[in-house]
Image (tube, rainbow, N blue to C red; front, side):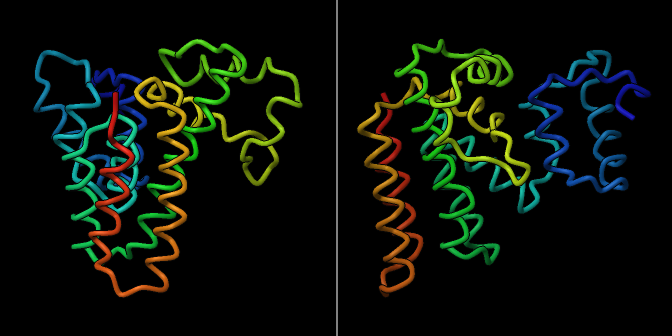
Amino acid sequence: RAKGRGLQFQEEALDLFVLLTGGDSRQIENELEKIDLYVGAERRVTAEQVRVLVPLSRAGVIFELGNALAACALDRALGLVRGLLDQGESAIGILLVAILPTVRNLLLAKDLMERHRLARPSAPFTFISAVNRLPPSATEHLPRKKDGTLNAYALGIAAMSAHRFQTPQLVAGLEACLEANVQLVSSQLDHELILTEIVVKLLACQ
């Protein structure tokens, strides 16, 4: 549909557009029309334009929160956490679906890059290729999809941002997530405060 309008999406922009529209054909058509009018004669579509123009669904907000954490964008990350809570999302859900997987993938990617001297990738697929060339013993600890294959795209995304973090910082972030999990289940502490503390602790970025 985008090609029919002569729109050229950057790879990241297309991934973000698909996620935000959730495969809803009516919304896809509406948002393409909006983007078409916005870009005018300049037919290239960037991720930033998609982020501005396409409204965030629940899945989109969670995706954006992971991006904000990886980018060390503290204000944006805290705003997204607050927005999810205001929409009725549970704090434990935000922790387990957005924050914890992001921290874990950053730590796994950082470890692979340091242990096997892998270069910082310019795109996820270049990191995927590098990981696939490693011996099985080097990747047996990595999370896998239901079909048994590596969830390499998420690691590739993380590898692009891992340089912003130190390994001890990510280890501390993972421990903070586990501690927060217990606090959210068993304490009366304010849930937004708990999540804010994790985000602030994690994003003491270089």
